[in-house]
Length: 335
Image (tube, rainbow, N blue to C red):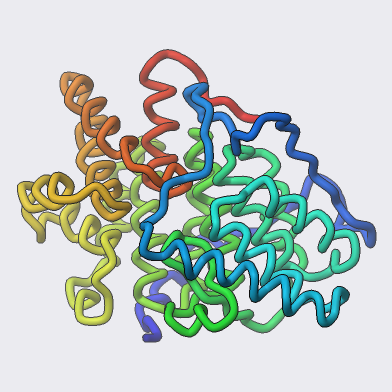
C-alpha cells in the first residue's frame, strides 16, 4: 500500500550522500578476513556462527540456493542469476560466502547500485559497519537520477529471491540504501549522521510499513542526539490511522512512544515470544529506560533480552548488542 504520509517529509533535510572516493569505473573488492568456520565476531567480542532460523523455513532456503545455482549454470554471466544466488546464500545465513559472491559480481557489474546496497547489508549484519557505510554511499551515488527500483523483502529483513519473492511485500533499493545507511550510523553511536539518512529513507518510502520502520529509528536517533523537541516533531508526524495499513512492530512502538499504546502491553508482547518482533519490543522498552540513568540496571536487563534471540543478524539484536557494548564501558568494535 502506498503511504501518502511519506509526502509529509518534504520539509525534512534531504540526504546528499558523499562517497569517500569518486565513483570510478572500476570494481571495489572487499575482503572479509576470517579463517575459522564462524561467520563473524560480535561487538561484544563473542564468536558468531550461522544464525538460527525457523526450522520450518530451512528446506525452502536450501532449495532456493539449489535453484539459484541451477539458473546460474544456464548463464554464468547473467546479473539477475548471480544476484539471486548471492541473496539465497545470505538467506541461508552464509554471510561470508555471500560477500565472496557479491565481490565477484562487483568486478563485472560495478555500475549497478543493487550490488553495493545488498553487499552493504550483509556487511552490516557481519558487524563490518564502516565497510557497509562505504557500500551504501556508493549505492547512493549510483542511484542518483534513477527511477525507483523495486525489491522484495524477506522474513529475515533481507530479500527474497526467485519464486519466494512473491510472498513478501515490495520495498525499494532507494529506501533500503538510506535505511540501512542510517542503521549503520546508529549502531556506531553516530546518531547525528544517522538522522539525515533515516529522514531520507522516510521521505522516499513507498509503503506505510517502510515509513514506520524509518520513523522509529529516526525518532530513536533524534532523542539520542539530545533533541527531545525534534523527537517530538517526528512523533507528531505519526498518524494513528496508519494502523489501518500496517501492523509492523515498528509502528506499534511509535504509537507507544506517542502514548497511544500502553507500556504494559509492549512489555507483555516482548515477554510473550522470543522472535524478532519480541526482540524489537524488548529493545523499545530498554531504550525508554536508557534515557533514565537511575534505571540503567533495568535497561541492561531488557537489552539482554533483546540480545538473547537466535537470529543475531536481526537489527534489534544488533542494536541491543551495540548498546550493551557501550554500557559495559567498551567502545563499539568497528572493523
